[in-house]
Image (cartoon, rainbow, N blue to C red; front, top):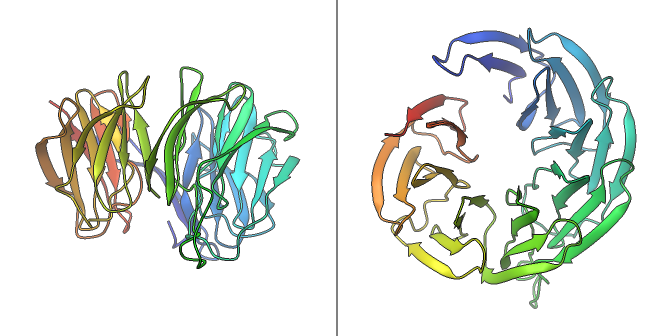
Length: 309
């Protein structure tokens, strides 16, 4: 949390397993976790690794600027994105830098970054230029990049093209969204487009067996056919509620909103199935799904678990 605390909770009952705090640091963007390591970035650019068992510090390292999105851990690398456009590959054992990839940051952009995504031998990330980039996991060398949004317009605001939404890798395809741009699917090994549709989103998407669900910039929730990109349905009942990225659990799409409500939508047609309130603060991050349980955190750090019937 921004008050310097990192906590681990028992997933079954919410009981605190361990908690550590450094009041000098303001953690941001959420943690990344593996079986034995938790990694968190801070607004002053420091990244720390903690034991997932007891919260003891394993290592810390200083990056070039603030970190406002969650790192990623997988396949023997920790990937961390800093606000100045750098993507770092760190050693999970001691936090030392293995490589760094740099992209130019536009003069004006939305505040936020896509969290890196690791898989298929690559680290994927979205940039404020509207590009999706894949670099080699081993050394950070560029593999491919694709433009989701060209940022057209006469003013800098009209040219905002950030690809800040959550990326998803599924069945060798990478799914991504951008602001003032598109939702698209690319083949992960080459970047070759599979399909694309015009849509503006800064939140991101979720991918199920047959559908891709996305929250757009206006508060609509859309579902697209996973294979072809054809529109399946659109739910307009949450307009201007500043939706979180969606999650998919069972036969439902789940989104949070700016008033702390969590909404369950039918995957079949987008109709509302249920609604619960976590608190009065916004829900900005994607719900986390484990089995039939959905975990939701609001902007105050309040966490709730819901079991889907």
